[in-house]
Image (cartoon, rainbow, N blue to C red; front, side, top):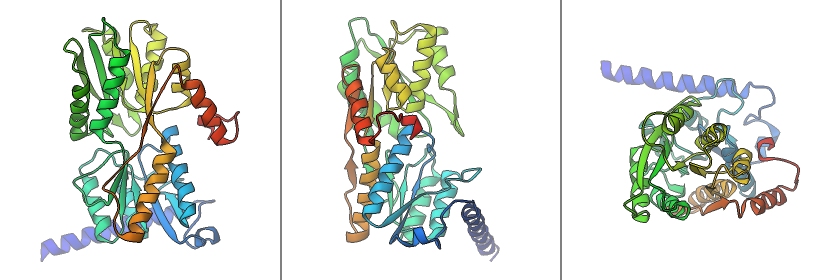
Length: 343
């Protein structure tokens, strides 16, 4: 009996906490609430959730999802957007469940609790589509992104393209928040299946993140100027790590000694490629990923089935293609003067 009471109390507390967060959200001036006229024109309410809301990559994902949502009569809400203290991934999922949304698009964090929260949403009839990173041990309905094994192969091919006879050591920097141990293992398998030159060794490191503050600069600094062997190449597996490596290698004047292969796209990364500090970056089309995630969710809503895995194509941007990419981006944006960071 006591155990049942404790569980009941925990349930009441969770519901109350979610209610407070939701109430606080809709009390923010300028935010739409479910009763507003604009919201009422939509048939579906979709929650999109991520910890990395401040990156240019994620902003493009969100824009792609919003545009696709309009085609389906769906309002795509970035859960917690506008709050002074944005909710954690766990709280954001609970808010979405409390709101009884029609579906969740989730860019999951590296947290064991996420799978159980996905299962909680699914058990209440709320379908979940994971984006960019998967949670295969959950009840999620589908995954939209690129498999970590295939991603490892993509980077392996680029390493071989950039390597010369003097390349001996390549450092691979995983963002801890988005590459858990299984993800890292699959990436390494894909990498080793492609790079089969015995003389190239790999130094795998995990960059830790604490609420947006990471130790990438310290890790890279220790590798390139500290004790030990300096890498000939640094592979950066997210936007922030790529920018940190670019800034440090540029400031230390080591671009002739260390090559950088980055991830995703921002104005700063494109500048680094144009200036010769970054050899290349591998990205997926973020707007396409947002659009395809909405399409996957709405397919499930309509037919109660969806592809287990929807692959988003990767794209390599280097000094031979960066100008064309900028021109294409500006043309698609309709304003050649507006930068990515201003969007």
